[in-house]
Image 1 (cartoon, one colour):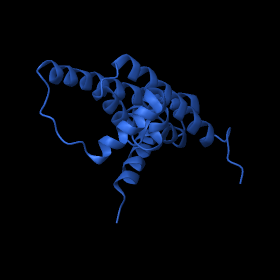
Image 2: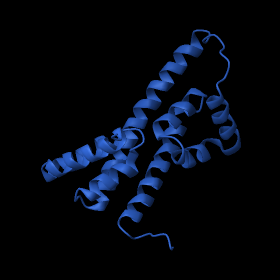
Image 3: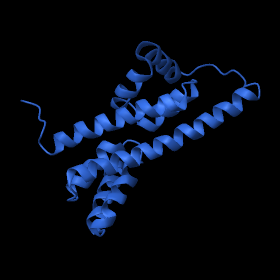
Image 4: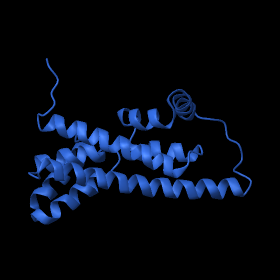
Length: 166
């Protein structure tokens, strides 16, 4: 049985390897826009594909951030449309929604943004933050910080600059 996620990563790695050098960062940026691959996974794909680590990290982070920005802007428009029209009928909150609200009240936008990638893709976290009424500028600021932080940390691990002592 094949793992579709692993197949997707291998497909991006193969695509990076087959592209001319000038286009390789574009493929890495596209990979960064994919939920669960994100900037950090895309940087790994690029580094393994032979791209300089700084270029791979920047391309992956940019791709991730552009996707998050689109999600935030769309979510903000949807929220505005719903709230200005009197709102949607009240639905019972799902367990996942309640869990998010609890984390948000405990850690705030910075904490949810910076710790969120450990549990959820940044696109999901950004949409949830925007849907709860956090201003898009604030969401983008903290999501950008999280993308930069996690992409940098993972890139430093991949390149051996950082390591975990065993």
